[in-house]
Amino acid sequence: HGIDHVVLRTFSKAYGLAGLRVGYAVCSSLELARVIAAAKTPFNVNAAAQTAAIAALADESWMKASASRVRAERVRTATALVGLGFRVAPSQTNFLFFDCKGDSSSLAADLLKQGIIVKAWREAGYERYLRATIGLPADNDRLIAALQELVGR
Image 1 (cartoon, helix red, strand yellow):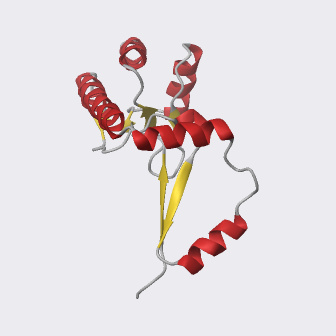
Image 2 (tube, rainbow, N blue to C red):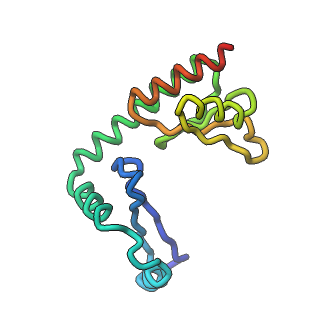
């Protein structure tokens, strides 16, 4: 039987429902599922999010197309960042983690002034790294152009 475990999944990435904050858990045992259910807050997912999640699960072709678009944009954006001289960590997710070759907090603040939100990493050894979410092509183009402008100064 082994060790009890839980797999948590979100609808944020492949299903494109990040703003709705909806996900689910798959438990290795009914007992574990009951413990988790007892700990959750009431009304933790609103009706609109539930409806969207159910619709997303029913449309597998849309999810596959959405995931394909994210993969293509991730490759395109990573290639552009490498072209600007950044070292980009391998990714299978909807974000890129890259060495900005300087103070990531400062660069994140400069990007925010242009309306671009990235996460500056502050953990020891990663102070030079930024995390940028893969967005729509136009969003990714804005990030690339802003970084090109900021790095070029």
